[in-house]
Image 1 (cartoon, one colour):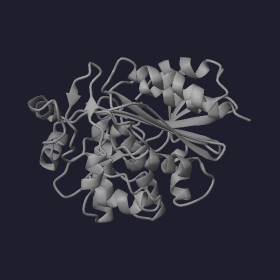
Image 2: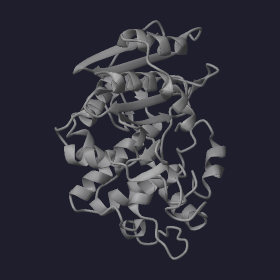
Image 3: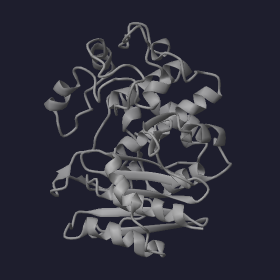
Image 4: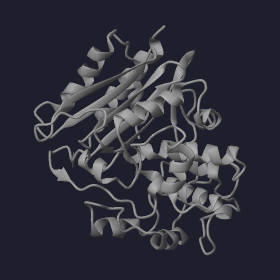
Length: 354
């Protein structure tokens, strides 16, 4: 997640009229002097989809079908899944999370208040970034920190987790909160797991056939290896139980379909998508708002920039759109926040187009 520091970038006037030149300006530096690095950028502008690629791995250039981990950009899918479940009458936004968890699970409370599904989706639950006990699991295998964090550990950890602030009082980014949202939606829907539920309710309706958690043999061959900023090869991350916070993998080809659906005024899942985009809570009044897991940058009379990013040990992702105008997807096999600069530059460009 980025903070208001990025508004400095958004405040700068766009000087590039050509999308290709704009993307190249911000994406090419990400692969310069990095023989291991690749970046794939998909842009939807004026109804036209364009894919730009930079760098190569093992002598091969990436393309729109190359597979990357998308990390916390998964949360945008979880927010849409929540809206879909509300529209279907399965849950309500103000339902206490406790109501939709298995027997024996205990969610922290404060001042006789319950954490609701909306609190989780807007990061206003007061929950910390991770639950009690997660650090010990992560330290045991820092190269794949979530792999052995199973449901039993989450359930036990919740009972010892202290809230950082009053429920609903302020925005505190929480991976465990997003993961808990996924658990609640799965249990309320009587589904097998998060992957099967998000596939049935979000991925299939939007025809996202190359997005998921478990990869097919063919997709595994298209998976680009990830690296840290120093160029060290990184393991792929597995998510033991809080998949909704960051477990999805995808391609720019699929994510262009995703941003197109979100930017459109109609189409599959339109009501759920529109609900997820609404400003449900302020993060920084007048500048930054929270949708259902989405982040919204607002600037007076200009259309909002709606986005989410993600990062794992070896990858960075950015998804964003401007309603009615277009969107962008950025996938990079280096864990660097600088990849966001590509996405924000394109979004600002789209917002200013007549």
